[in-house]
Length: 157
Image 1: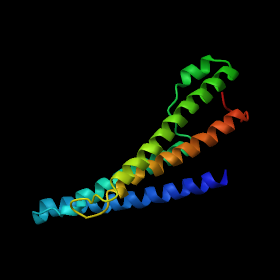
Image 2: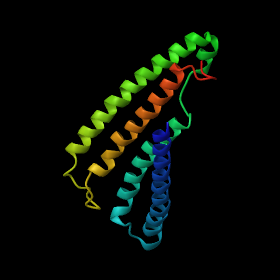
Image 3: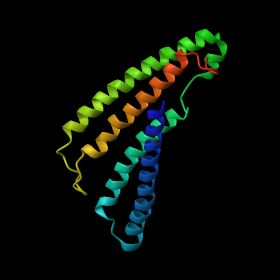
């Protein structure tokens, strides 16, 4: 799916960007604390928000690239048809979970849109938005994989 490939690249770009933010802010925070004797108030908050986005974008990109949790011992003991059925059933449950998390994440983002972070004064919708965005990507990527399995893609089972 071309859209999913584009979304994967966007998630990976966001992942790299947020990792760069963390890579700059955390040493700066350590320097401020131990060398200058005072820690910038905003640095811990910024690093935490970036980490939330790294987690969600990294999870989505990894899922799209095939890094999935699975019990391969189970699949190897089943016939190819049964293994495929188990995989599809598991994916349907995962899709339901992702959908619930998208809805919940949207609700939490809306609830927190007017709340501001103490140090930076940034809307708390920013860190909360990582949930619906990340889980929506995971939903799309899992749906794509499930469709691929249902179509009988080689190597599945």
